[in-house]
Image 1 (tube, rainbow, N blue to C red):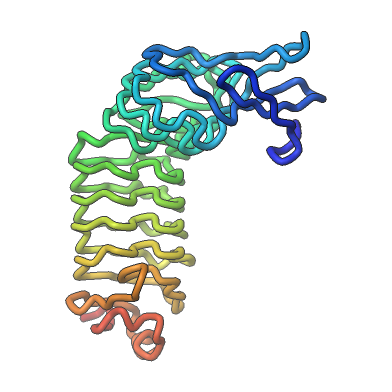
Image 2: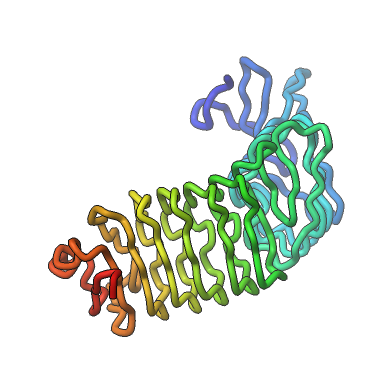
Length: 298
């Protein structure tokens, strides 16, 4: 393994800043400027004092706000694309992903819905119905389905990566597979038309702000297998009406409901919990955001 980000030395060449591992002769792009280029093939190497360093990664925010970029090629030498590496590249239309890429966090903040093409020889990723999914089908890495009203995650998916569906502004319904175990941070945040979410039995944990600012969300049904609600999972979902929490043990609130800044209550929302836990939830000030807490049987 190469050096971590804090051990690599910074090297500037032209309008690019690289992080170099002198032992393994590898480089990461920390910052890149490509000007008005509409088609861009990321460099697969950089020459430093006559020595070749293989470029393996694009780091957080490296190409932020590259407004003219339309078509992007990620070479075979890359194995990692960090979150927001191409954030707010508003006119990006197509992305070719080379056969070495293993991890691709998201293409967040795009106005357009780019076409992703993954090298057929890539052993790690595949493209399925608008989603970049792990080859074994267990993880959704990234997705941009902003034009679709109804999104169905395929059976076999166990995890949704951070920001994968964040900002899908037209999504009205979401069907989760029976195999889903967890969502990560902001997996489905800022989806203003999403109305209802039913989680399958077997689902275990929500990441931080997984469904934050989903303004139309009214109904949430969480299974008995849930053991970690996550910090601010449904924060600023102020139109919630029904929340069913089926866990047989009382869970911590973690600021998961109401408004993140001042704990605004949800006067029209009803929290349903197992009958033997009703009084515990009612007496816990953290759950005071719900003015109505009733047994599931009702």
